[in-house]
View 1 (cartoon, rainbow, N blue to C red):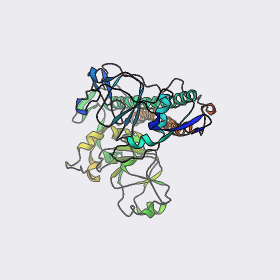
View 2 (cartoon, rainbow, N blue to C red):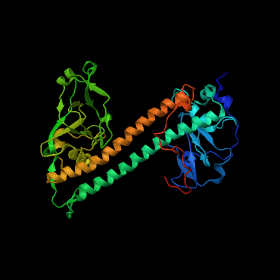
View 3 (cartoon, rainbow, N blue to C red):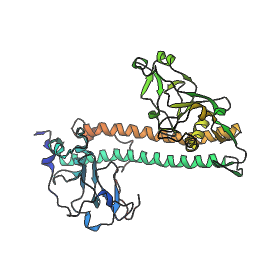
View 4 (cartoon, helix red, strand yellow):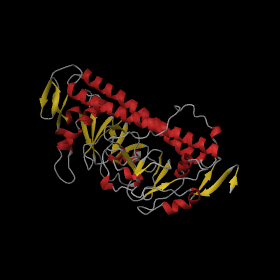
Length: 408
């Protein structure tokens, strides 16, 4: 079938047979943390491990597409590698099909999960649209460029997160005044810092119990209802899964504050988050610290994030640690007595967080763009000539071959 120079084929009809070394499959138990060759398997991580096994290396007929028979993951591999574990299928399109385009066309296929059952038989029967060869190459280039932008943002988030972690350790163990440190039972801190209970930072409120579980409290709600799953440790809360109504809020324990530091007390004990919603509510797994007039809310958030491990250790030992509101608010940690020092610490860390948030927003925008282009370009709904990608940095998207002897 052909339309405007495009043809439609099944995935199976696009493939050519390939020959790989008989030893070219490594079991998980043989993966190493470093080695000469990367191991590519069906897992979500691009590189699963490393090996020195020369006999198992696949270096001819590249590039290849690796497909996870169980996971449905696709990987484009254009450097020597070793195939890992069962369920790792190797695909090579016929010579008149651009490998990178074929890789993206396969990723655009709707392939529903069958759990841990195999999916390759179903994949082979799916149809893909094939543009003329020159357009295939252009589509592959564009999609890889957008994915390169996503990878760049991921790298920026990772680097900024490492910077924040290092800055927090410096600020909460040395402070900003160049003071000598004193050794304490919970670690080194500046000489002038005082140990005080969490209750000294503000009012501690524990989230509500039913009747806020009732669906009528959430239908049409606009007020954030925070649960532990709504945030990662040490992050600001962007959105919540549930939003409560005014009536539901009246039935629960509302939290009214310009900013709130949340600390989980349930199965995710010690996880800290931060919300800027002026009014919100939480479930019973969260202790909320509403900072008082003498404590900057951002400072309390960063302070609690830094001391989270220590707070977690104060929970009663059990399969599911318990930390009641009364016990939580009496836990003592160190903080500066100087208001200006607290403000400057919070401002320094907030600047880094703002940078992290910016890169996450850019990443989300690029991810949405990629998903739209993946479908529209591989079905001829839009054409490369119609696109303006000038805002993207040129040359992005090529995954570099891993370095020999690289350690992961």
